[in-house]
Length: 172
Image 1 (cartoon, helix red, strand yellow):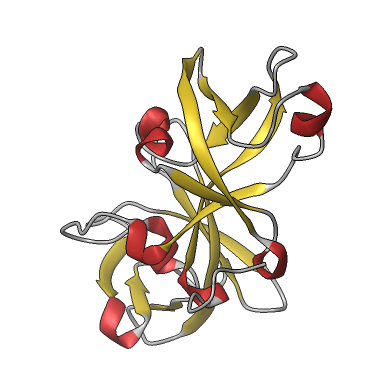
Image 2 (cartoon, rainbow, N blue to C red):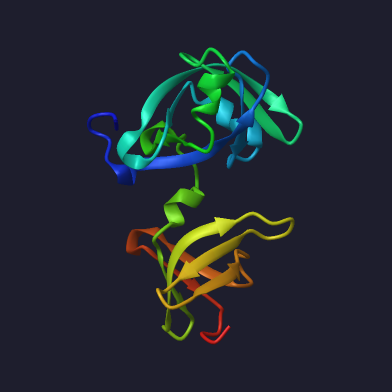
């Protein structure tokens, strides 16, 4: 159940439970944070979908290979960990540090238009690649994958107006 006073719009997904690690309740976590171990900076996590999130205290965690492994309060064995497989890990937006600029989560839902004012859709997500990250822009009929390359494809992000201006042809 969501924490009182925290609406679904204020949650930021930091990663997801991706696997089991050992027999004492440890879990593998796929972290969206950069660096990946940055997810360990949050002492409390909320696991589950928007309407059913449950709060857990982070007891221990460390980087393990390309990912992170953690132990959460109340999850004592492999079966308990297995029950959390695939669940999103979120924190309230208010738990994030103030930064210059924005978080990826701030871009979700922004209207994307090109330099000519043609609306291309809304940002539905992003994909991490070896080079530039890619924004997924959906308009209901199709999805466009646009490299997130400020100064090359991304001209401007106007958070206050909830829009992004890109150098992208509508047929691409």
